[in-house]
Image 1: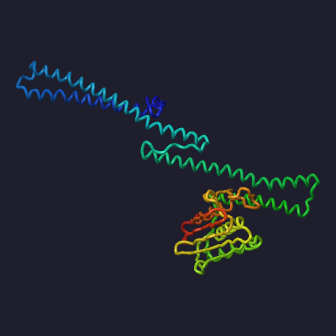
Image 2: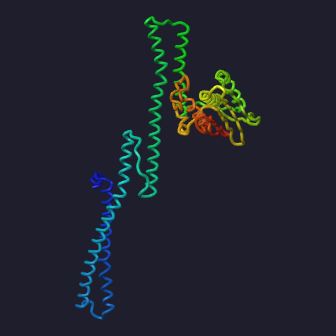
Image 3: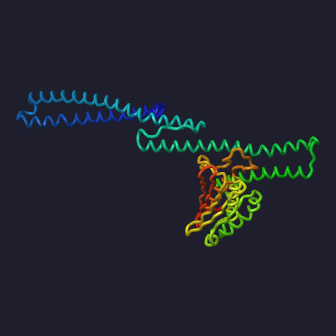
Length: 379
C-alpha cells in the first residue's frame, strides 16, 4: 500500500492522509455517539416520566431519538466531510504549488541552469526562509560558474600569447629562418618564466583556498615589513616616475605580530605592484601602518585611476581585471589580489578595497589581529 502511495504526487498523498484523518474522526464520533447517546437519553426519560422502563412510551421515545440523532449526525458528518474535503483540497494546492516551483528550480540547477529562482514567501516563515536560502545558494552558484568560465577564458588567453611566441620562434629556428642567438634565447626564457609565474600564482591561490598553504609564523616587526616592501618596489616606482611614500609612527613600526614574514611581504608587494599598474607618472602611492592594542592596519593608497563602484566587489576574485584591455605584461593576470586575500585570510585578517570612482584613486586596507598565533591557519 505504501509503495503504491509513493507513486502518486505529494499533493495527492497529503490529500489522502487528511481524508483518512477525517474519516477516522467521523467514525470515532459516530461510535462515541452510538455508545453514549442512547444510554443518556434512556436515563433522562426514566427521571422525567415515572413509568416502567419497558413501557411503550419509553420505547417509542427511544426509537424517535435513535432515528433523529442518527439521521442528524449522519447528515452533519457528511456535510462536514464534504466541506473539509473542499477546504483541504485548496489548502493542499496552495501548499504543493510552491513546493513544485522549488522542485522545478532544483531540477534546473541540477542540470546546470544556475539562473533558476523561486518566488519568496506565501505559505509561512519557514518556506520563505527555505526559498530565500535556495535563491541565495543559486545566486552563489551562478556567480561561481561565471567566475569559473571567465577564469578558464582568461587562463587560456594568458597562456596563448607565450605559447604562440615559443611555438613561432621554435618553428622559425627549425626552418632555419631564425637562429638561436643570445637575444632569441633571452626572449624564449622570458616567455617560459611568464608561464612559470602564471602556474605558480594559480597554485598558490588554489593551495590557499583549499587550506593547504604552508605558513611559518615568527615574531615580526611591522617596521621590518614596511622596509622590505619599500626596498623591493622602490626601483620600479622610480622607473615609472611614481612617488612611493611610507607613513607610520614609531609605535606602529615597533608593533610586533606573529606571522609569516615572507607571505605578508608578498601581500604588500602585490598591493604596491597593483597600485603602480594603475597610476601614471607624477602620481603618489602611500604605504601606511597603524597599530592599536587589538589590531594592525596596513593601507596602500594611491592617487591613480580609481575603481568604479561595480568593480569593487570583484577586485579580489581570480583573473578579475578592472581594465579588461590589459594583458599580463601590462596589467597583471588578475591573480595578485586573489593571492593577497588568500594570505591575509590565512592570517585571520581581512582585506578590503575602497574608491570614490574613476580618477579618484583607491585604497586597499589589510587588518590583522595583534594575536594571530591561535587563529592563524598554520599547515
